[in-house]
Image (cartoon, rainbow, N blue to C red):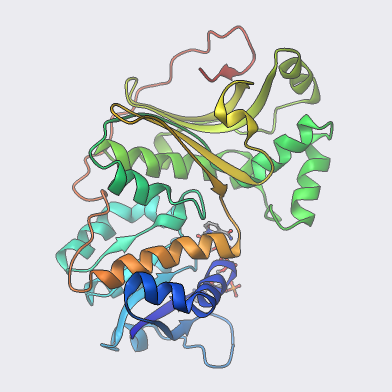
Amino acid sequence: MINIAILGLGTVGGGVAEVVEKNQNEIKKSLGDNLHVKYILDIRDIPGVVKDINVIVNDPDVKVICETMGGKEPAYTYTHLALEHGISVCTSNKELVDAHGVELSEIARAHNCSYLFEASVGGGIPILRSLRESCGHEKISYIAGILNGTCNYILTNMKAGKDFNTALKEAQEKGFAERNPAADVEGHDTARKIAILASLVSGKKFSYEQVNCEGITKITQDDFVEAERNKMSIKLLGVYDAENNSVNVAPYLIPENHILYGVNDVFNGIFVKGNQIDNLMFYGRGAGKLPTASAVVSDVIECAKNIGRNVNNNFVDLPLAEVNKIPENNSGFKFRVLN
Ligand SMILES: NC(=O)c1ccc[n+]([C@@H]2O[C@H](COP(=O)([O-])OP(=O)(O)OC[C@H]3O[C@@H](n4cnc5c(N)ncnc54)[C@H](OP(=O)(O)O)[C@@H]3O)[C@@H](O)[C@H]2O)c1
């Protein structure tokens, strides 16, 4: 039996406990052993929950920790401490991965454990493992992703005739959007995710601050009428272009014949071009309790299969990328057009 701990029993952390419980048989099949949640750490007074990280990191039985608290602190300090104790950490925390992912990955390597973050991009979509494992030998030239379910839900509803505020309110009522939706609608969430993807495939560290970022707040109903007239839809994309050495987030016009055109509602879609494999498309739930937790558990299993060893996560020894400004929009439209 492999003992694990969960830091932060919120949406994702609660989902991890549920997936470990409900999919015991499947986990055993994949890992060849059972997973057991030995500790849960949370700030709230919940029976059985611990408050002191030292209890967890000083227990030699704990082999993997799931950091599902979010934010930079104390997530950074706790992750650092766990890795220094040789305990692998799996996280859904894109903010921390973007800001300190390289440093934490190098600490993991130095202590023969792992730092994995499948759930930080694309929720339940197994995009990072596919890129670093199945496509690790590919030269990835281009990634275009619908990476924020809240924005995609709003844009899908605007296409159907609703205005921005009504669509946003509906997303909040359904629990898709935060009460403060700025990180989603201003594109910052997408920027963190495309920066992580670009770093993973390029061998250089792209950071969120380097992403040229425009959100969806200026899109109007008239824009959708015009897009429809030209047989296109409007989607917020995070785009990495290896040839231009650029990363940007902006609303794009997607032609009807492009595979991203049909990615609607809260779903995410990630379109990837490799030099040998050609075009790939990943589609699925980019957020939500169980899909995101499923991605965390996939990392836990990989760590548990490699106890005492470091899993290469493509996030070590990365020099900071020198990012170019994205080329002018010469499409003749208000928005860029996806080719
Ligand atoms: N929700 C999703 O669908 C989703 C998808 C992909 C990635 N993520 C990422 O996953 C992370 C967690 O998101 P979430 O939606 O699960 O958030 P959440 O529901 O707010 O859960 C976070 C949990 O951590 C607890 N916590 C906060 N600070 C703590 C501290 N100092 N010590 C101990 N516990 C603490 C929170 O307690 P309180 O409630 O008392 O603050 C809460 O129980 C974030 O980085 C998020 O971006 C989420």
